[in-house]
Image 1: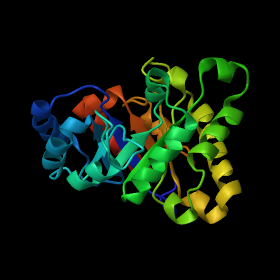
Image 2 (image 1 turned 90 degrees about the horizontal axis):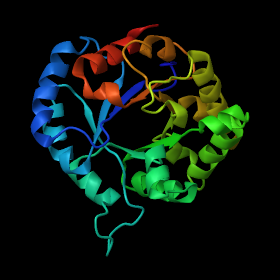
Image 3 (image 1 turned 90 degrees about the vertical axis):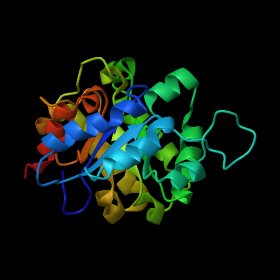
Length: 257
């Protein structure tokens, strides 16, 4: 982490879990366990139907609301979709785009991820852009080539001013929900490489201002080691974000110098 130049962010991704009725007790338990001095921005990304309840309950904990997906369209005959305008209207501050589960189960490609990121930026919502390689790609030593392509594609047509609102989340696909975690050195190597890609496109100053998160089974036990790396500016947390005590422990781990 490097707070001198960029935000530290801990973002929880609840995926298709929790209920609107369970958010208040979750927040009450989280508040009791939250560190007294908050050293990062905390975000919870919930299913869209639960976002209003999340916003109401999250005020006391000063937690920003996030969504898990968005349509690339502004409005129209797109049954079941939710636009960036609609998310902004209810108070969403962050939104995940390009998560590997969206890519795998819904066929989302890099161009669609780019369109969604642009739609969010136009409405003042910060996109959390997910990138990451498969186990096969890592074993073939293609990690950086693949991740660099994803970053370049996601940021195509986004200018340096808009880049300031973007968050990149490196999530190796082989570590999501598997219990496997990249070592701190592996995670740092890729996050450093992502920053180098951004530096080549935008220059040194914009690149050092971008928050790059690590996702992929970050938990209460390994968070401190991962967050100690210079190019890891936080985490996109899956399973551990469903457990208030564990989530609070990860937030507390950002206090290290």
